[in-house]
Image 1 (cartoon, helix red, strand yellow):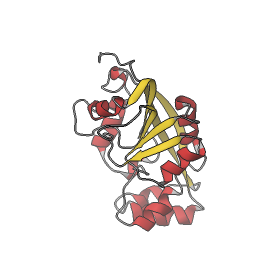
Image 2 (cartoon, rainbow, N blue to C red):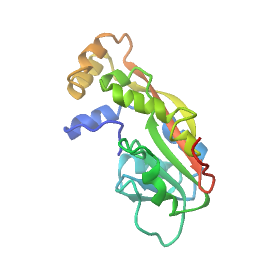
Image 3 (cartoon, rainbow, N blue to C red):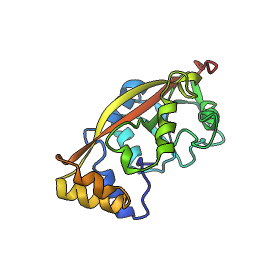
Image 4 (spheres, one colour):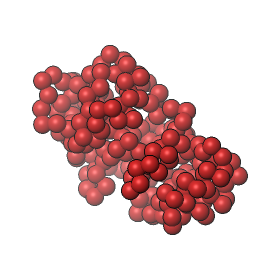
Length: 211
């Protein structure tokens, strides 16, 4: 998925997505953790030409997209890196990393698996108005949780949603999040919201049992 949210209005989705991480901290971190330049990179949950695919192209990755987050059934040669944005872990599973097991079978030994997720505990989280979501994000980032306990490490990024001005912020947030957006926008004194992102990463073949 190209964005940390899914809106029914595609044009509104594009407008809001253009405000997310305008500093490109997320792709720069992926490049640091995954060393993608010139390497076969599997981008899950995406289609050719998508926004995230273009970002990885800029990093020099040899991108192969696949719309299913669990990966294709087979590949003629292994991948060096696999990336998934905001949909890599299963929200409804007791073992949220289980859906990624088929993906790892497509990776070369020593390849890097990178999972971008919201970290929570920021100015964006209240927009969702979902305490269960907040609790889930916190559990994933705990040392004794199901993700770090499965051998993942985490890099936490301090990003932003950056709007052209306060008026644009109020309009976008109200339209995108009718139940919560207006109240959040009314408290803003700058045209941006602090947004924390977690990049979970694991080297294939380096998985340990959960604590």
